Length: 83
Image (cartoon, rainbow, N blue to C red; front, side, top):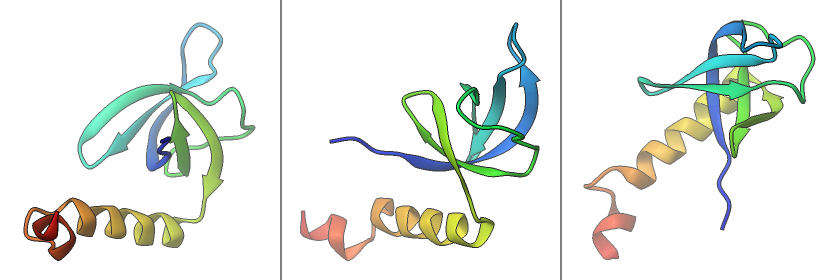
């Protein structure tokens, strides 16, 4: 199973070629490649998979998706409790 996550770009222009960015997901920061996308800017949300930004994501859609992830990973969630 593969999982792609929405992450927020907090710094761009990293790496020797300038095609990397620093992203944040709930306080966890990671340098990723943005070589597959043009014009990525600080504040953008991107879909991250296997270290690469695959596409941009609307901020409202990103917030909704992150809220859903939060619900399913919360310890008191009925889905987790039933497992």
